[in-house]
Amino acid sequence: MQTHILGLLTPLMALFFAATFAIFWRVGRLRRHVLGFAIGYFLFACGFLVTHFLPGDAIYVFHTTQAFYALGTVFFLGSLCERVGQRLHLGSIAVIYVLSASVLAIAMGMTSDAGPRLILINIGYGAMFVVGLTTLLQAQRRDWIDRAIILVTAVQAADFFIRPTLSVTYEQIIPAELYQQSVYYSLIGLVLGVKSTAVAMVLLGATIVEWTSSVRESGERDPLTGLLNRGAFEQHMQGVISRSASEGRSLSLVVADIDHFKQVNDIWGHQAGDKAISEFGALIETMIRNCDVAARIGGEEFCVAVWDCESGPAGRLADRIRQAFVALKHEGINADVRLTASFGVAQARAGENYEALFKRADAALYKAKRAGRDRVVLADEDARIGLSDKDESQDTMTSQKATGEQTADVFALKERAVAQS
Image (tube, rainbow, N blue to C red; front, side):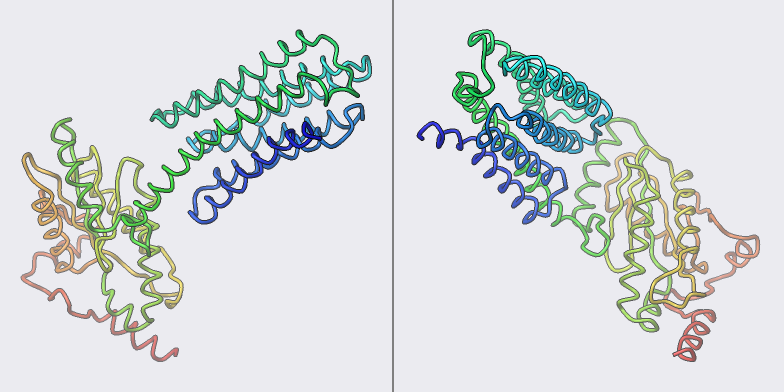
């Protein structure tokens, strides 16, 4: 009876860890790989409970246990790989499972000795962990927690190859009906308990680190667009300007502003305005590179730090964003209305700080507004991108419109909206 109760410690620990990871995932709103850890531990617990409560000589016990363990391994390894941006090769895992299950069926038909069965299925698990370990080693992430995860995964793989072979060699023959009273069964309960705890501690550490980072990042993100907020972006720019100077790389700053945004709020309401801001932020995020950083710095104004890029290519990037935004249809705004945005671009100069760089880019944006909006202005070359010949000639005229003046097309939109309402 005491042995029976002690045998429940390992699955109960696995269930505890499953619940812990599920709570972390739910409360912390963490990525789905944390939920995958919870599912993996739950399936491991189910597999051990099947072995513990069902008769060892039943023909379905080893197959059922193998199915639970294999499925738990898929969730566990798949989540580890997804955490570092890799994808577990499920085809290889499936081939290993089918081969292990087939050989297990043959072994069960040839002998009642549980020893060969244990070696076969554990070699299968070991091979699965080798596939997962190989995938993890391909990831570029290498901080201390990643190295710890790689280490425990390697230990897991080695254990599946070494432990069953040594145990069966020591005990020699293990009748299936006496499997739960064998030395191997007692040893596996102890080993699984220690492994489950050790691995869970490492993964809980990784999860806590991710949760802490998520909380910190949530304070750095604009809630409407998900981009960096002004404070976080300015802090980022201080570092990236120093880096560009030390590495001798170009850095450009793009400042963007949605045109006539006050009229959008006045005509279609703040909800439609917020939706337009969100859509503009999402558009910028999809059109920049991974090495570039975008932020909403206030109201309808956005910034993009374009890494290793001079003002000319950065201006062309801004113009592609400008054209894509013109083509967007916006929820809550008349279907035939297209919003526009103006852009100012400046390339960082030697010894220039962020405040001076932003001032030049913002001045270029102001010129784009004065020139009629829906265009890109480069601060250094004082050039205009995305203008027709007519626009260029008009731009040479003196002080055409004040920044806040409503153009005729906006009045027309307002009259049309009132009429339709």
